[in-house]
Amino acid sequence: MITSLNSATFIGIDAVLVNVEIFIANGIPGIMIVGLPDVSTKEAKDRVKAAIKNSGFEYPVKKITINLAPADLKKEGPLFDLSLAIGILISAGLLKCVLNLNDYIIAGELSLNGNIKKVNSIIALSILAKKINKKLIIPCENINSAKFLGVDFIAFSHLKDICAFISGSRFNETSAEKDSVYIHNIKAVREYQESEIEVKDVAFLEGITQDIDNNVKDRENYPDFFDIKEQELAKRAIVIAVSGHHNILMVGPPGSGKTMLAQSIEGIQPNLSLEESIETSNIYSFSNKKISNEAGLIIRRPFIPVHHTVSIAGLIGGGASNPLPGDISLAHNGVLFIDEFSELSKKTLDSLRQPMEDKAINLSRSRFSIVLPSNFMLVAAMNPCPCGYYGDIKHECKCSSAEIYKFYTKLSGPILDRFDIFIEVYSAGLDKLIVNKKTASSSEIKNLIEKTRQIQLKRFQDSGIRFNAGVKSSKIEKYFAVSDTALELAQSAVKKLNISSRGYYRILRVSRTIADLDAKDEIDDSSVLEALNYRNTNLLRV
Ligand SMILES: [Zn+2]
Image (cartoon, rainbow, N blue to C red; front, side, top):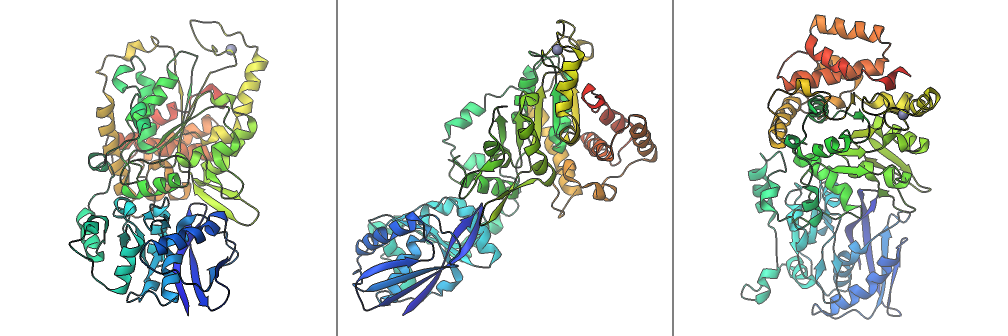
């Protein structure tokens, strides 16, 4: 008899349905798996055999043929174990099945004693299941993630438990194994989700998950806004950038505090929505970075510092078979911070252009191509010239004008055109004159930014847009109300300053965020004037 079950494999960060067919016949005893299995799928034979024996079943002494379809798809990982074991038992007539298994995608690695081990890519599996209207059969260890993902599932911790469930027999309630059996009733899951449906942000997860990742502790050493003195102009620019997810470039001499300013962003980024968290967490589940909280979800917007010597594969993603996500994807829905931005090679700079434009990176391999999301906010910092002191009042710049010209032209054009905000950061002391107001702390600033984010979410409801920076030029008129005088101001400035049309739309987006920070319905003159100020840089005059 042929048994047909559903499991899955992965292309990039997407799960793809795999049909597992098991056929058992008389003949020389053995097991053959066809359909391009990788090494771990071959190893599955031994694990499945031992797990079946250790779950109280006889292993059939027959010729077992297993076909994984579609055949041209590379199958990765030990995810198939559970479907193989169940299929063998059903095909051999050793397990009666009262469940319509076609409604389920089965995923789980078996250990030799029959325990079902955690799968890493539960998010991708649940996205697939929802898309094709199926439910999941998963390991118990994945329950805490699965319940946030809006997918119907049942979970087991041992092969013999799932066999009992499939065959319709009841569990032995008095057995000590009761606690190891976890059947998530599908109705109960739905009720659970409905009760949580109002939760739009994952900040609440911080309270209910125990974060054991030591890296997180290190990360909390970011500077507080309150501790950064005498940089009010730069801080204002940063608040605007983070509020609207605008790319920002900070230029200033060494020691002016650019790096500290950039690092402070980590403490003021707005909360992640559950949807954003799932997107970003799915990327992490395919990387070497572990999410160690119980829910398996990223709970803060990423802040990814990148060194200027980064390889292109490290930056945009790469690897021979199934490419690993690069820093730009790990920063999805958060910040990519590049210090010493002008030190990036021309090639590396160029590699950023397409993903910054498309908010996703397309990586082609010989047999397939994958798309990884990369909707990051770029925060870059650099010196104003090769020696670092061009424009500084305390030090003399030792560069020739030819050197400065060369330095600027390397960056000019397409890559500079992708920044919304340029800010010159001087050594502390220069803008003392304007520092009379009270300095806000990071948590106060975060609250302000959060309010601005809510205004944007309301504006872009159901459009897929999340921040002002994400509005396409063609949609600006639809979403942004601009006063007549402000529009005139922006248009005449564009003519006078010879700003590109791309630059014009960037000014409007930044103006919109400035107006949102003041809770203004319309972009007015003062919003445009301030936005224009953030394009006032020597870099754009080369
Ligand atoms: Zn210099």
